[in-house]
Length: 492
Image (cartoon, rainbow, N blue to C red; front, side, top):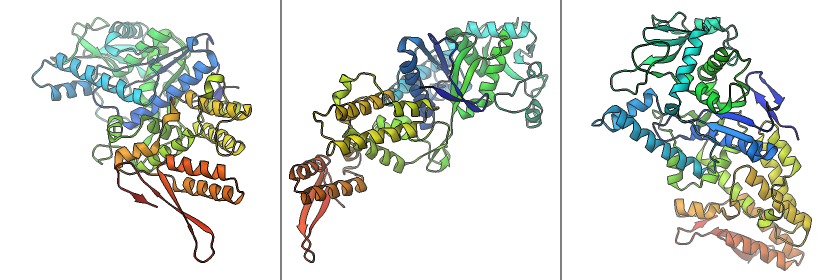
C-alpha cells in the first residue's frame, strides 16, 4: 500500500514521504472560538480526523503528532464578548466567551466521533513565540515597523503567491484602493497591531513602546513551529484558507528561518453548500452541528454524510442526503459483527487501497458495500455461522468502520432515530422490496427457515408484512406497513 495525497502546493497527487517516519507531523487550522461551530466547520475536522487515523494505522499511533489549534484572540471574539457581557470588562467577557465556546466545540465534535488531536495549542498561550517570529522577520529584512504595526514586506519574498497560484502583480491589481497609508505595498500584511483601549494586549515586539496583539496569520506559524518544528509533513484546512491565511503562514515561516518549506504537503477540503446555496445567516440556511444534534440526528449520520463525498469536492448538505445516509448506515449495521475482536486491526486490502488513494472515502465506502454484499450472498442473508471466510468478512467490515471513525456501529438503528425525531419510522423502500422479493424466492424454494428469518429481520426494523392471495392469479402478494412504538402509523 502506498499513501498518495493531493498537494495544493504542486497541484498533483504524490506519494507521501514523511520527513521522519518515526514522527509524522500534521497541523490543521482549528476554530476561532466565538460561536457554535457550523456544519462547514465540521468538514475539515472530520476529514483530517480520518487522515490522522490512517496515518496512525500506517506508521503506528505513537509515531504521529497531530496539532489542531484554538484561536482565542480575534476581533470576532471581542465583538461577541462585548455583545454578550456588556457589563463586564472586555477581557473578562472574552475569557467567558472563549471558555464557553471551546467547551461547546469539544462536545459537538465528540458526537461526530472525532479523536482528540495530540496537542491543541491556544493562541494566547503562544504570544512569546509570536513576538520572537516578528523580531526575526524585522531583523532579516522581511518585515518592518510602521505606525505601531509590524508588517510583512511581501516584495521581499520572490515566490510569494506560489501556494495560491497567483502572481504578486495579479494580487496587487486586485487589491482594494483604500490601502492603509503606512503600508509599503498593498499586499503587505499585519504581523502585530496596536490594541484599542480595553482589548487584550501584550508587550509588543520590534521595540514598539505601546502594547498590542498578534495578527491572525502569525498565530498559526508560531504554534506550528512550537509543536511540530520549522518544517513538518502536512498542513490542512478548508479551501477558503489557501489565500491569504495559508499563503501568509508560508511567507512568515519560510522567511523567518530561511527554510525551503513550512509543510511539504498542503491539503484542503472543498466548499460546503446547504440545499444548493452558500450557507449564510441572511439566507436562513446557517446550520450548526449543535442544531442538528438537538434535532435528534445521530452524530454518526453527520460523519457518514460528509465521507460519502470526496474531501476535495464541493458537498451539497441536504436533509434528503442525511436521511439517505442514515438508511445506508442502518443496512450496514446488520452486517457488522463482534468478530472484529478475532481480527484486530486487520483491514481489507481493497478498502485500504481506496482510502490510501488521497482519502477516497466514496471508493472506500463502495468497497465496504462489497464486503457487506459478499457476506450477505455467501451466508444466506448475513447470519453469522461457522464459515471462517464469512466471519472474517464481517470482521473486516467492522474494522473498516473503525478506521473511518465509527464506533459501536452495530447498535445504530435509523428507525429508532427517526421515530424519536418525527414520531414515525422512515425506511429505504427499495431495500424492503428487495428483501420481500428474497423472501418470496425462499418460499418458492421451500426454504421456509430463510423466509422466516427475513420476516423476523423486517419485523425488527418495525416493518409488518401482510400476505394475501391475488384474486386473479392466486399468487401470494405481500403488502407492508411501518409502525413505530407509540407513534403514528405510516403505510407504504
